[in-house]
Length: 331
Image (cartoon, rainbow, N blue to C red; front, side, top):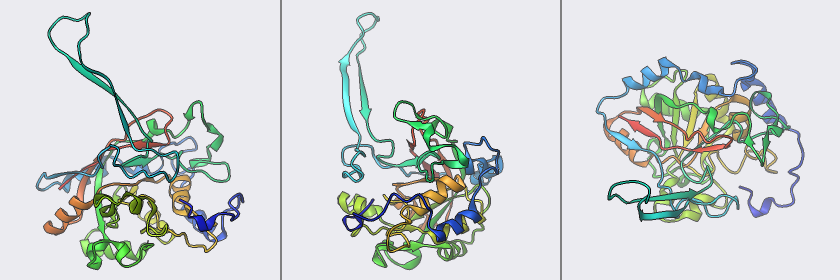
């Protein structure tokens, strides 16, 4: 996610910029759930959170928040190793000659990046200063075994109240990029959205942050969606991190490719991915990208509500640092 103009800048320094360090010191959850904890804020997804989510069900209308997994997905080669799913047919209308009956079957296989489409990042996804979430060493990830701690198999199924934060609709625009392609969502924005919805966040809630950016993907402009407008993306900013921590939010999921606002706060980009770093490595927050919130947000606006039951079970791929997921919101 580094634009050409950033080439040549010093990206090797291990020192966290001071303004990010100040926030880290206030939001770190290390040790909160024990020194060996690999779940982070998923510990907030308790029975009370599930019951609160169930209370949000009124009509029973269901919305899939997942993108289709196929060759027209959002991957365009940045980063270069991320690929859209490719399907390989292993057998087509064949039958097992050792089995009785007249049936035939087809089998297939898929190759894809674990974060190719709608996904959740694990707590092994981002590190700095040689450490992952809760102080686990970044060296616990290897090319042979993947993540030996905090892999996708440690992610919890999500059953809780989801709060739809629809800032474009609140602003009267189709997408936040109509205001500013790099719109930085801060704590004041979240307060405004929650006040407008008449909701008070509670521990274990998750935020479904709609920026409207995914409409570019739906319109067929994959490059605009994946690379932004000159590498500018709307999304949660450093100014939202303490709000999320202070309200004990369990997860934040967005409809963007980059997840967080770009460009980062510092002109020299020394704080690139600061929201990723603080959310995942320091807070243990569940986060994910490319969640399709368009149909859900329209239904919520029509119904005059922002609370839903969210059910999402990430694929428990052992050692993976991200996990595909097909979330469902129920009104």
